[in-house]
Length: 561
Image 1 (tube, rainbow, N blue to C red):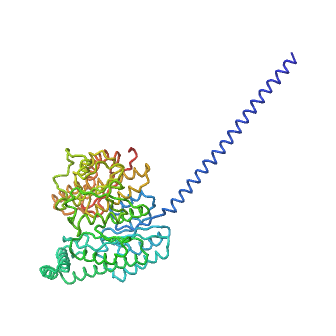
Image 2 (image 1 turned 90 degrees about the vertical axis):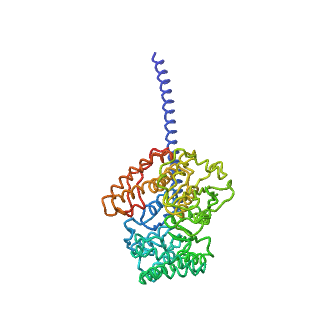
Image 3 (image 1 turned 135 degrees about the horizontal axis):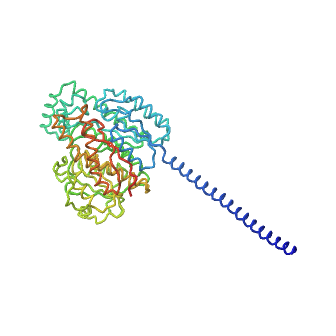
């Protein structure tokens, strides 16, 4: 009995030893696995960190000095930049001008000099850097010598930061056809029309040598006080000289790329005359200097040019009314077709005449006879609208495939064509493949839509970027269609009933902000349905306290598909 017990005890001990040994081996195996996985994860994390550092070294901070403080210039640029790989460094809005209230230029120059040290690419508005903004370029009294000193600072920034590439935008000082001092010197409200006509007929006589133009030029000149004329011509001469200096800075390789845009001009006039002279000077540097119609969107064009630098985007343009493509848009001095080619090239693209080879299709919804304001009796989307696919088929395009469809809504100035909006919203085209703009001048529309299309074509395809891209499209539809075509007229009609031209300094501004917020969210339903998104407007404001332009805040798209 004792012997049996002893043998049983040994047997049990042997079994327990094997079990303990097995458990120890298993535990050891688990420890080894944990160590291996930890090292593996750590290795991946190090690779990710290395990849991130490499990305940042390739796409470091982009220094951005905006044209001015408006939503449609600064804010929309920053939104577009979110779908690129660049981190944007830009001055606080408090440092920028407030319409005719000029900024502290010395502070802006100091900020730019500091930011340049940590940047590899810059997009700089010469109007902001040299004068204090777009409006300042038209009203500042700084001498040419003072401005030249600032140009020297820009050159020193290049010398002190050899890693920094300078992409610069500038404008040819405009000569509006209408008398208004809102964005011009105070005297333009009284003598603006005479100044425009003097400019128009002076240049027209230079070109055509028609004695009638000489007579008209002299007559209008005599209607303008000499002090007013001297001030206007002196400022023009200063700005013209500065633009020539900027071209020389391209020649000296200080500036990598320069765009000079013509804002609010005509077929004849001082603006056009200066542009012709600048084009001659820029001729040897055609691949680095672009001169064309536009202004507010020019820095977006520079951004898309940077993004597409390594792989330019091919664009196949078609027109709704091809027989009218050589007509001249309102506020511009060249045929629409010429501007289309210029804008494509400026944005980092090139015209591709073979549809099969094109990255993008550019559909220009051009005007048939004359560009006008959007008709007030056609603000609602037509219920019987045909889908956009039908419009494309009339141009010979049966399918866009995987291409980006750029819609340049040029039929009207200062607002969208409700027919094309309705056709788009009825289409089955994936909204991710759409780029759209339809606002202000023809040049603004072309530049904004083409730049957006180029950015989309070269955008990294991930969920975050697609969400941001939907937000960009939502903003364009809200501003270009809902506000410019519908909301602005409602505001202005109400102002007329109050015997007011504008609402700055009155109680009505806040009322209109709330009314526009309601209007925007009402139509957001249609826009969201097309975009498959869930955006809404949380705030509306008027950047320059007038009805012409609007700004708004969009709630993040957290539940979209």
